[in-house]
Amino acid sequence: MSQFRMSSTITAPADDDLRFADVRRRVKAIFIGSIGNLVEWYDFYAYAAFALYFAGSFFPGSDPVVQQLNAAILFAFGFIARPIGGWLFGHLADDGIAAPVMLGVARAIQGLSLGGEYGASAT
Image (cartoon, rainbow, N blue to C red; front, side, top):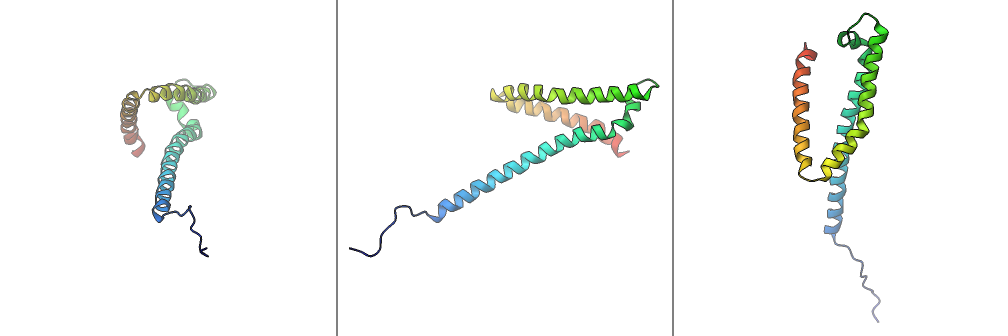
């Protein structure tokens, strides 16, 4: 007939530390993933914003309307290719070993592209 009852749902402080570490790890992963997504969307927005200025340099001809339409078609092509790329690379990533190989190839292509772009943009 004790006045004190023992509860069976006592949580140890270590459980709270593990939960906090798990939340911190998840927030960090979400933040890092968001940064990558931000960079990708910035690329699309930068292309759309500056297409007026570089269309004449990349597309031959003397009619600026045709040059602008060509730049817009390339923008649309990149936009349409997004879901196809999501399907293709998602399928390859699900196969296991293809995921790191494709990531390495994509990073190499991105590095080559940055190397070609950086000199001209810095000048």
